[in-house]
Each structure stands twice: as C-alpha cells, then as structure tokens.
Length: 487
Ligand code: FAD
Image 1 (cartoon, rainbow, N blue to C red):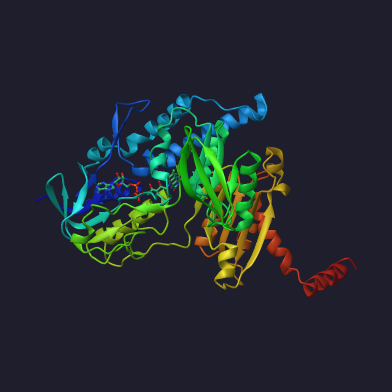
Image 2 (cartoon, rainbow, N blue to C red; image 1 turned 180 degrees about the vertical axis):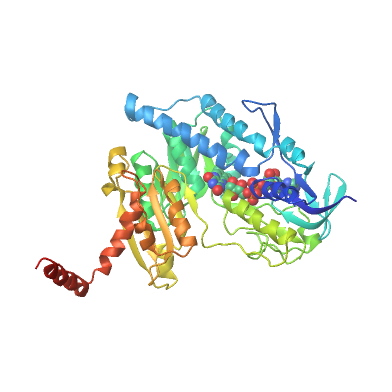
C-alpha cells in the first residue's frame, strides 16, 4: 500500500492548498478528486481543471457573470435607456464566463499538481479506516487524512419543486437562453449576486427571502442599501417569505410565496434558482467507518481543524463555520502546520475573517456586527460615515446611501466593521489589518489617505469617534488655552 504524509480528499479551494503546500514542505501527498472538467486556456494546452465549486460552479463563474451583467447594465443605462430588455441569447455571456474559468483552470489543474509532485488520484475517495482511503478499488495510507469535499446546494422540501425542475449553482451557468422570468429561492449572498446578475442581463427577477431582509448575516441598515438598489433595478424582493409550493401551469411554473403573516401570492416564472443554503458533502465518504463525527450541517472539527479522530482533519465548506474560498485556503494553512510541524497546534482566527457579497453595491464585513454586539450584550459604540460626503465617491457617482461603519469596544479597539459600496470588498482590507492587530479605530484616522480616494472613508469614521472625545470639559479647556495663546 502506498504511504503518504497527507491524503487529501477533495481538490477544491481547501484541498489544493494543502496538496501544493504539502509537497512544497517536503511531504508525500496524494490528492483524491472525483470531478475534473476539461478547459482550454487562452495561452496553453487543454487541462483537466479541478478547483471544486470555486472554479467550476461558484466564485469564478459568478463573478464573471456579474462583470458581464454590469457591462450590460451600464450599456442599457448609458446608451440605450433604462428598461430595454436584455439579450435573449446568453451564449456570448456564458462564453465569457467559460473563458474566465479557462484562464484560471491551469492553476487548479491535474497537470499542474502532478508536475508539483502530488499523486493525483481521479475518483471518489472513501475512508476505510482512520488512515486508509479507497479510490477506484485501490487503497492508500495516510499519516493524516484531510477531508475537503465541499458543499452543495440545499434543496428545500417544497411540494412540487422537484417535479417542476429547478436550477442550482451547478446548472445555472449551463443556461444559453436567458429566462424571461427567474425566481430565486434564497436571499443570501448567492441568491442576491445571481439575482442581480440575471436582472441586469434582462430577466424579470423575484427573490424570495425567508429572513427579515436579504443578506441576513448583515445588519438591517447595511442590507437595506442593497435591497433598495435591487428594487431600483426592478428586482422584486419578498422578505420574511418562503416558497410554499410549486405547480406547472401551461408551460410556466407558478410558485406560491407565503409571507410570515400568512398571506400568499402566486408568482409565475420560467425558471427557479434554488439558493437556500448549503449541505456538506459527507455522503459516501466512509466517515462512519473511520468513526468521524458529523452532523447534517458539517463534519465536527475544532478550531485546529481536528475531527474527533486524531488522524482525520476537515477544512472548507464541509467543516465550516464559514463557507468561503479564502477561509478554506486559510484552514489549509492551519492543517499544513498542524500535520507537518505539529509541535504547538495552530488555531483558526475566526474573528478576523472578512467576507464580501459581490453585488452592486458590495457588502463587506469583518467581525462583530452592530446587531450581534447588541444581542450578545457586548459593550460597544458604533461610528459611521457616509460616502455621500466622500469627494471621490461624489465624483464617481457612488455616494448615494452607501456608508461604512465600525463597531468598537470601550477602549476604542475595533470589534467589527461593515462597508456597503461598489468597492467595499477592496476597501475592507485596511480595517481587517487594524482589527487583526488590535489597533484602535483612531489608528485608521492617523493614516494619511490619498485625496480624493474612497479610502478616506476610514479617516472619516475615525473622526466621528474623535468628535465624541471632545467633551464639554475638554472643549472649555481648549477655549481657555486658545485665549491664553493670543494674549
Ligand atoms: P470545494 O472547492 O467545493 O471543493 C470540494 C471538492 O471535493 C470538489 O472538487 C469535489 O468534486 C470534491 N469531492 C467531493 N467529494 C469527494 C469525494 N468523495 N472524493 C473525491 N473528491 C470529492 N466564496 C468566496 O470566498 N468568494 C466568492 O465570491 C464566492 N462565491 C460563490 C458563488 C457561488 C455561486 C457559490 C456556490 C459559492 C461561492 N463561494 C464563494 C464559496 C466557495 O465556492 C466555497 O466556499 C469553496 O469552494 C469551498 O472550498 P472547499 O475546498 O471546501 O470545497
């Protein structure tokens, strides 16, 4: 039996980083992946692209689609006038999506990883014991086994849904004809991103969100800016509602949307996208045989990414708590350290993990939200600044209702931050760096931000906090000092 330091099951955002990092650090690594897709990059030979959801059905195609949708939106508003129907033929748009995937695919390819010295085993991996993984009838042994099998769309149990047919993130990028009407089940990041993209491409989009507002992990005031933008663009958003049944009538799907107050409305649609949460890919993995504990939400792993079985580790979507590519990659680094240099085990830094919803405007977040701080009884103060007063945003036309806010503790240290703005994702980094290093909000005010830049928003938030430090007593003292200085 072949023996490895690391046997990685799943060649996506998490597994690929473990595999590449492992061989880089001198380990013998086997990478088991059951789904590679053929891609033809613009400047090289065809490759078998691994990469999991991120490359195949997630981040990359959705961001490429959003970019195409943004261009279509700008063209419609700038040249053709609002309200023109979008292109019915999605072919060229999806070709662009495919081209973006193809350009990235070599990085995640079987060919590249084989070249790095990883033994890539194509097929479904199954644990036979805490150290043994079977692939296509062959069993390999790992000192450590890393499970990085990702997640898939959770399909809610809605009467009639299965019979009516529906799309998920795995099938939506196969569309070549734009649905005239699209109903999105789910108001989370995937639902709003794809909902906005299809609206901008020309579909009539309805989003059904089971929570009080879209992006339920964000504060209501932050999500409201996005919700208003979506509604402005013509997206119909039903909050506090759920699809309670689906029927097919005369070629169209009719979705009964039931609100929290019990009232119901029938929405006719041509296509349904299910984006109502995720399920971990744990089936057929042999977790039971290896004695690895898991729930319907995740493989149970601690902050060191250890499962209850010492040789088995779990990272990425299958383990959570975050379901992001950068989180999976970050956990991969923790596992590499804990398996190949296991002197003092490293822990994941959950509190400093940022995330972005890539709508227009984007929503970027790190740490505690204002509502969470209140709910958890954490002593805090909140300061915010509006992009309507940021000169660059005014010039760009991106002021509007967009804003940034920072939650601080009584000593002024940053507990969390949220930004809503078309470039929120790129603006958040500075706050993450400050928060991670325990800096106070005033540190953001001490940085010289170039004028006119969007980054001046950080200084503006810090100044709001500074203003509150000017108590009447301090102000009186300053007035006396000024009077003394002009004698
Ligand atoms: P994956 O990358 O999905 O990899 C899992 C791999 O395991 C897959 O290749 C699968 O084939 C393989 N596998 C499963 N079972 C087995 C088995 N038994 N044997 C062998 N192989 C197996 N995140 C972001 O950070 N930013 C974004 O903008 C973003 N956008 C997204 C948009 C959409 C539409 C979706 C659906 C997701 C998005 N995500 C985004 C989330 C991101 O895609 C995931 O968090 C990330 O891919 C998780 O990485 P992973 O390694 O856990 O799983």
